[in-house]
Image (cartoon, rainbow, N blue to C red; front, side):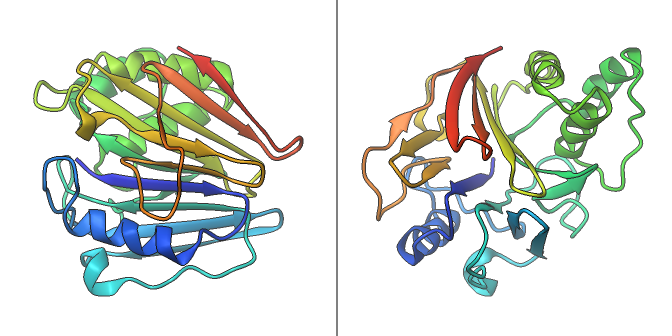
Length: 235
């Protein structure tokens, strides 16, 4: 199980960033450490940046730069795939990036994707990379996202019957947050906070921001930079 943090609307305040480091060291839901590497993606029209490390975030944290509109941070607790840069999130493919927590039966999920005509050979060995590749190869739109989400939900594992993932375009123009869970357990349940200037979403509430709300099950939050709006859908 991993931790993620999505922020839209400029650079996240340092208090939020540093508290993400702290919940990666020891989360406040069940007390796990997420030390199998970490990464941060920052994006805006015209370019993006990506930094990854296989070391724990609390030993190697580097603050992301200012000047971008979308930020995704992820700290990994490896389940599928070895500890390597290739398997560290965010993972980039086809103009998009993904960060994910939860575990899928990768072999069975890959088999189902091949039946849809998706080539399942990837650079790394994570279930996460398969989710992103399927989304892009099936069209990279909301219809494709719902199809992939419905399929992936069938292959969550018994010990972690859930999935949360963020997919964002590398120009910062769009982002999707997908959540599915079979159990209403705080460790599995992401939260979101929306105000007039920014949107924050995370695996659990972060100190330094108010009005965190539980994200409904089987839902998709959709962000569009063209109108600076966030909408809610389901799958």
